[in-house]
Amino acid sequence: QQPVEPEMRQVALMADVYQVCGAVGKECQVRLAFGAGEQKTQDWVTASRQRPDPAWEHVHGKQPALEDRDNSFGSEVDTSKTRQEDMVTFQFTQKQGRIPPLVDMTPEDIQSQPYIMVNIYTRGIMSGELRVGYQMRRLADFPKYDPGSPSKPRFMAMEPMPNP
Image 1 (spheres, rainbow, N blue to C red):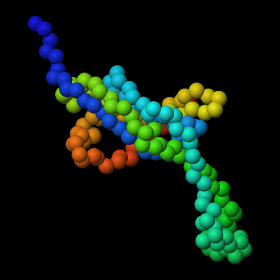
Image 2: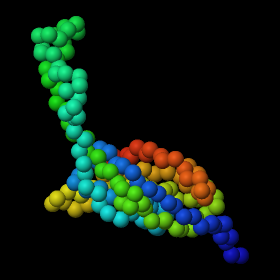
Image 3: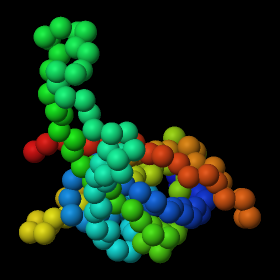
């Protein structure tokens, strides 16, 4: 007797990437994988750093001098100037962030379906590409496409890659 094949269906995964924040690198690329298939953003996007707004000091004034501050917490709190670091942000344009449709066959049974993987890769000036984050989701977590009614953008917090 021949084994019964599970019922299969064809799926087309579509994704747009708007922004990647906090990934370390000079350039960034996002890849979408499902089963044996993979698609990625067309281009590597260059990082832009979000710096403190110079207009903030003009509007809010300079911070008071150390002796003018109310130090009601005693000597345990360090009220010296703090260092603000830049946040690395990768902004994708509509063309850069469009991932081509990923078409694949998957079983109808939800438990037998592979995970959708979103992977973040970065690269530097002298270094090759490096996978810095990922997220695994079930196909059932995403709504089916309804023509003429696009779904709202979805925030996905990535899991960091363990240090080697």
